[in-house]
Image 1 (cartoon, rainbow, N blue to C red):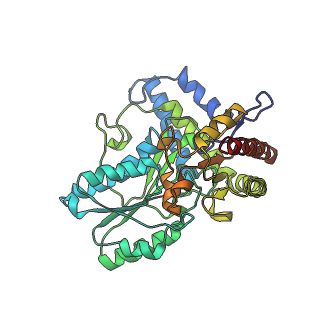
Image 2 (image 1 turned 45 degrees about the vertical axis):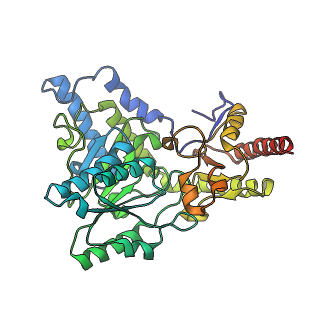
Image 3 (image 1 turned 30 degrees about the vertical axis):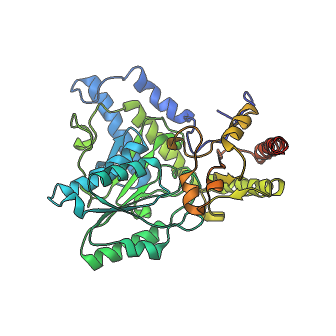
Length: 400
């Protein structure tokens, strides 16, 4: 694991990927070697694999407090978002309602997996509305309420933003949606992208007040290539890919047996200790932010402070600094950080999230995202700050 005595490197990109836990790896190994059969086969080996998939589903159902038949395994959070958004909207269309009469509400600060899925629906005629956010990324509830209409069939938001760490107030959103449903006599589904949440927040299905919830095992010490879509009994979905009848016909393709087993262990471990983990890491985060500001007073913190911010997230802007180059410099000194969401694409360019909350191009093109692990120490972040300060001073000399 990064941060061990064997490595001088400090991994601070936990929002992009997390290491596979020892427990998840141990659970997966038998299904990568000995019990390798296709879980759809009727022979004994196949049924052993099938039992493993269903045991994993039952374990996840217990972790998130939902019936197992309402859990769909996917290849990750991106596919889960696609199935939730496209699957729900197309299910309404199947009832002969034209796409032009359907409306989706989301945010311009959403992850590309949501943004691009919604954009694809827009090209097909679906109306798309973007709810405004304030200067830390929180949805403006009163403005959101005004967007809800008779045409609205789906609202899609992230529980916690992958770039700036803002935690949305889902209860307030659900309340506004229920009021609109009563007013218009319609059904409005709430989809929540909770990919970043399991290590840091309570994620039991009823607590999220959502109809559809997406997860990604790779964000909480599980295997890459495994995601989940949880749904309420009032949700009807249609598949967005075609092939076999796996996952109740919603997700064709041979199930990732080892991945499902590892994901079940990872989600269970993540949720079991989230409160203690959050308190410890948030204390390091807050001390680090204070230290960064004391050493680099020109730094701007993007996103909220305190409990409305995900415990392991620090996102800063340093206007005038080429932060893409700064990440290379930090990497050379043993620090792995990023400028924005990994799924937003490599290379330069601005953070659309920071641009939306600030309307400041200089701030949006000079971001650094530092996402802590549960093992990150304050001294690591103090060393990073020292390297960053040295780099900024060096760049200032060159610009004179």
